[in-house]
Length: 455
Image (cartoon, rainbow, N blue to C red; front, side, top):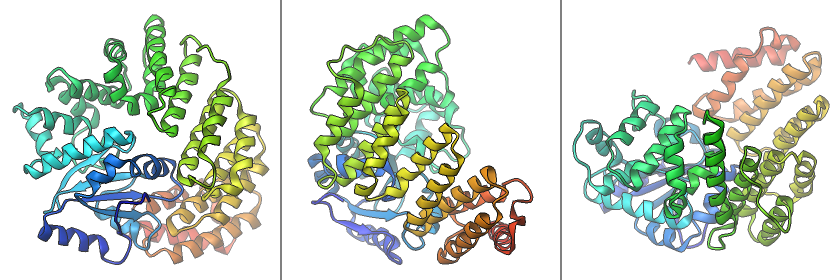
């Protein structure tokens, strides 16, 4: 984590409850960060957001708590506080109620502004839940309340704010009720993503305003290609692709942005060019531009930044049809990575595309053997076992070894059947009937899973 921020370890027994209880006395809000060491977006947060001076200044006003998904009992806590996706950021008021869930993809400057706004709303006794209720009831909201809703992390809500409401109709209702301006534009983007139906008029209007496009760069870089695919008419697609592409080019060349965001914009360029945007004039190719950004980071000096850069670069190379180059890059970087087991999953995917099932299973096994932390080991072990059942059902001995190891991992995790762990083990329960016939370990594992999930 960045220097200058005092992080409390929420994984220590009772620490999170202790911090929340203390906040009621000292009046300080609490920011909870939920993540994992191997998660690329988490690594981007650590390097790009938590290291930003403006963010450090805002976090001085709160009690900052980090909760690693592999901490002892972390998955049980995650269930209690409705945390699932890595990363999730929750801002709590001193009374313990949620003020808002904050988007993790913003750059440092925009995140600092969003956090500052959420703190102001919270200090005035407001929160996202009250703003949502008022908006849906037709009441008048001020600009900060609308901005809070437009910058809510809908992807990590886990029914905390929505409850029984549907995401798409809720976002569309908010978009319809919001006054013209930045918040309405952003809510419109959220609604389009939830509906999987893009609006060419809104997208073209957004791209025609560079400042507004820049303010929504997080959504457009992550989902711009998807929005383009959801446009029906070919002429609409070409116009929107060209407009989005112009913005992506400007972001990739913006030296005020961090390397991960510039690389994400570079990836968007390539995806848009394959979807109809005119190819950019480049003195060097995308592959070379990516390598420059990787070289600038350096493997030892910025391990968190390099982790997320590498992940984006591999995706971009695969998108560009340069799968051999992506695989070569991964192999070259494994030894320097602080979480090499994460990238072994990508190498397994590369082997699957080649039809090399033996290499697929070898990479999954290596990843599981190298995985650290109880939740991570359960997730990687479930991936290996499911792949063995799919690709090598006749290899009973190997299935048995994996099942034996999974039993050990379940025994080592006191919250093996909670939250993310539960979802991973449920995948094994749903495997084709008969997979556990390999021997006593697989029989015991399935029985343990069935009993654990039923509890």
